Amino acid sequence: MCGIVAYIGHREAYPIVLKGLKRLEYRGYDSAGVALISDKIDVFKKQGKVARLEESLLGTHLPSTIGIGHTRWATHGEPSDRNAHPHLSASGRISMIHNGIIENYASLKQELLNKGYQFNSDTDTEVLLNFIDDILSNNKCSLEEAVRIALKRVVGAYVIVMLDAENPDTLIAARKGSPLVIGIGENEHFLASDASPIIEYTKEVVYINDYELAIIKGNELVLKNLGNETITPFVHQLDMELAAIEKGGYEHFMLKEIHEQPTTIFDCLRGRLDMVNGEIIMAGVQEHIEALKNAKRIIVVACGTSWHAGLVAEYIIEELCRIPVEVEYASEFRYRNPIIEKGDVLFAISQSGETADTLVAIEKAKQQGAIIFGILNVVGSSIARISHAGAYTHAGPEIGVASTKAFTAQLVVLTMIALKIAKAKKTISDDRFLHLMQELNAVPDKVESILSNTENIQAIAQKHALASSFLYLGRGYNFPVALEGALKLKEISYIHAEGYPAAEMKHGPIALVDENLPVLFVATKDAYHEKVISNMQEINARKGKLIAVVTEGDQSIDSLTGDLIFVPEADELIAPIINVVPLQLLSYYIGTARGLDVDRPRNLAKSVTVE
Ligand code: M6R
Image 1 (cartoon, rainbow, N blue to C red):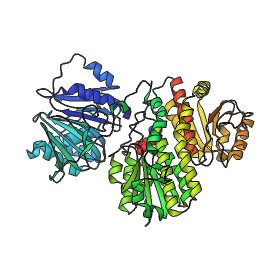
Image 2 (spheres, protein in one colour; image 1 turned 180 degrees about the vertical axis):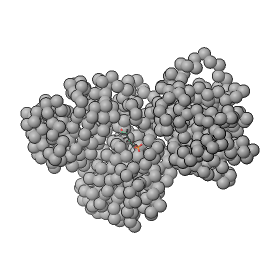
Image 3 (cartoon, rainbow, N blue to C red; image 1 turned 90 degrees about the vertical axis):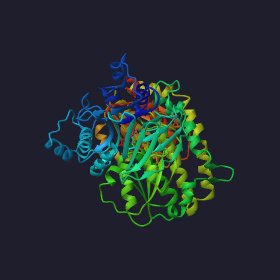
Image 4 (cartoon, rainbow, N blue to C red; image 1 turned 45 degrees about the vertical axis):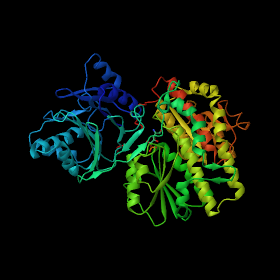
């Protein structure tokens, strides 16, 4: 979703802001713009890619050493030049970029219309900007004060960054509910929605909290709350390398990230899986082990792929720990007046740690007394900061919009958590515990073996690239894998795809089956194998085009289809981490065969920071 970049320092701002916008392209956007200061504020914005904005400014002399930039993902008003950010206030004095939604913008707009204000866009941002402009002119106060007054009236979520033509050495930023990171360089500051535009300049960053204002005047950064009290900034060291956010020779980030999985899974296990002593070391889990062990119920809230990881966790935790698990779409949970009882533990699963629905859902559960446990990839993210405890997935920055390596890392972390709880609860035998540890330890090599031989998956992708619809089926632990496979295909190839429990297809989706429909089964060896083969027979009898992910050496499906994708044998509880990898590859190869931008699929955003 919207990306924010800003610079203030001794260098020319435009090249830094432009590069930052390119680094944020992965978040998904439809227009881009920058504002710089000459003797006034100059705003340049274009619908479309950052490259289009860059092209329009080729040869323009832009010496300003302060600037703001934005990639917009449309919410209020269609994607267009006029709705793109930055916006300029009616007086021309101040300019703003904004990420989030001002929910009460309509009433604020009416107030301004009554005062004779006119608007050049359909955005909520321009309303907030002119609301501040109006306070400035009526109260004869500083911009900082005007922002403070305005934000007390605002309902919604925002990060804003502003320029002031009357104070060309000052940037003002504020946040509530959307992320903002400030990089601290040598006499310069970099502001962005995440660390990716900052990492090549500095590793020292400050994360701004909700209801905080950052005022950067010259070289000095001052943090204040809305009550005008000064706050001491806490400087974090970024643990991220530039190479992690570049393609490193791969054609797409998605392919790079799929291929990184042996390493990211290894990194996720490293230091946690103590094979010598037969222990799992996770400080965040250990600290809350009594609450986890005695939990009456675990509620998982998440969205999209992270929700699928939650479903796998439901199977694993119920099996190993004998604790009831409920997996909730965060967007539904938050509005449902959910029942939270004493002893409930809430797992929030999120790659970005910024997903608005998940964030609000856990705020609600926290207010009702639940213990919040975050399973997150982005260190220092908003969800990390409001969770009581948690575990990071250590998958590194995920740039491709389709989640791949973050998903497998989530599964690894959730499995380790389940094992740790089961051991503390004594609901697992020592032998089973050690066996599952060994199985986890073997995952990186098994994933590597799939990735070193992808020709077969590429051939199957070519064969089915023109299909208009797909069905993905699986049972037990492989059911969420089927859901995730279908989601990946939808996102990347724009082919309609549905995931279903294999046995459930008889209750409806089987009506879709004909000689044109590819039906993919995740059919590795597990407790349901025989039953899944029966389901495959049912599809075969109706001439559906069968594709199957099967365990190496399994010949029981040979007579049903030639489109077989072999994966190494694994315990059924661990198998989802391995079985999803060929499905990621299949959607990648189908998407590229259809000539699509797999890293930035249409309409999607990497970090969904609005509801
Ligand atoms: O950052 P999160 O894990 O909270 O994001 C949740 C979903 O938006 C995300 O998984 C989305 O479904 C991806 N595009 C899946 O590939």
